[in-house]
Image 1 (cartoon, rainbow, N blue to C red):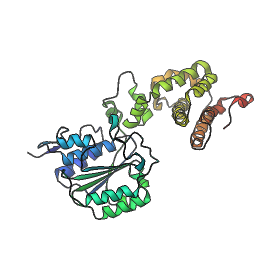
Image 2: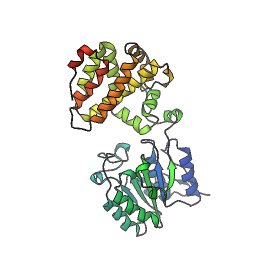
Image 3: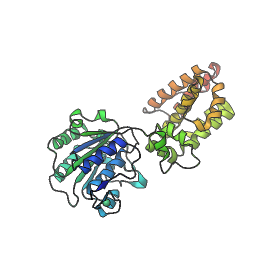
Image 4: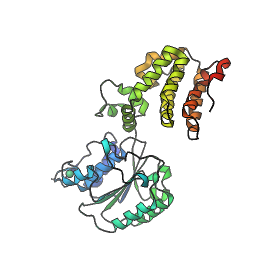
Length: 351
Ligand SMILES: [Zn+2]
C-alpha cells in the first residue's frame, strides 16, 4: 500500500498542500521551495509539516506525528533540520508556545553570510539520520545581500538529499536569481469559513471581528487574542462614546507608555476610524468591528467625514514619525487634532 501524505495542523492552502503531496507521492521533491504570502497564514507551519513528511518513518501515514523523526522535528531537535533565523536570536529556542520563530525575533534583524557558510559545509555531507536534510530559512528577506549571494551559489548546484525551504512574506526582498531557483508556493489569507475552523476561535470572541481585523491571517488574529487587543479596543470605544473627545484623550494618555504601545493603540484607532468612515459612506457590510456596531453608529453621528479623514492621515503620519526619537505618548495624543475645535488646539502636546 502506498504511503498517504497529509498535513495536519495546516489550515486552508489547498493548492500548496496538493503540490507538496503530489511531489512526495511521485518522489519528485524540488531542491528548493519559496513559500511566499502574507504574514501569519501558516507558511512556517507548512514548512515544518513538510520536513516531517520527508523524514517520517511511518509505513502508511506521513507525517505521523509520533515517530522519533516527527517528534524531534516538532521539538526542533532533529539533526537534519537546519533552521536559519537572524544571528541575534539564533541561540534562542524555537517553537515556544506554538510560535515557530524565537521570542526575540524581529523582521528588521539580519541573517549573516556566516550562517549560510555553515550550512554550505554541513550539506556537503550526507544527512546524519534522516532521509532528507531540510534547510529552513525564516524569513528569507532577512538574509543580507552577501548571504543571499552565497546561498545562490549553493542553489546553483543543489546537493542531493537536501531540500531548501525559504519562507518569505516580502518576496520582492529576495533576489530574483534566488527566486528563479526555487519552486514557488503561494499562500493566501484564509476564507472566513476556514478561519472559523481554527482551534482557538474561542467563545466570547467575535470571530467575524477577528477575521476582519486580522485580514484572514490566523497568526495576526492570535496576536490580537494573546495581547488582549479587543478589550483595549473596547476601552477605547467606551471612553470615546461616554465622554466624547475628553474620553478619547484620556484613553490615549493612559494606554501609551512606550513606542510599542503607541503602534498598537494607533493601529486600533485606525481600525475604528476606518469603520466610522465606512459607516459614513453607507458601506456597513465592510465594517471590521462588527461586534461594536451600535457604538460605532453612535460615534459616526457625532463626527464629520472630513474630521475622520484628517484623523486617519494624522494616525499614519504619527505612526511613521514614531521611528524618530520623539515622545510616543505626546505624539499619539496629538493625532486627535482634527477632532479639536480650533480655539482649543493649543491644549494638545507638541512633539
Ligand atoms: Zn512520523
